[in-house]
Image (cartoon, rainbow, N blue to C red; front, side, top):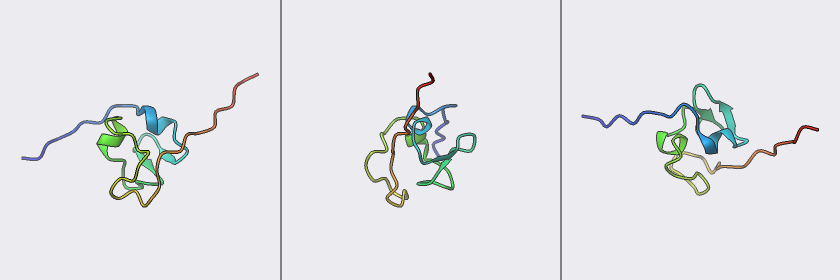
Length: 67
C-alpha cells in the first residue's frame, strides 16, 4: 500500500519563491509537473538541489512595500 501524503493548502516557502508558476496546481519552474509534497509542506527547505528540480531552487521574491 502506498503512503499518501496530503498537501497543505499553502506553502510558506513556495509562496515566497519567484519560481512559483501556479499555486492552485502546485507547479513551479523547478517542478512543472507538480511540487513534491515534502517541499510544498515545508518539511524540507528547497535551498539545495533536490531530485528532479533541474538545478532550479528557492529564490526569494522581492516584495515592494506600499507607500
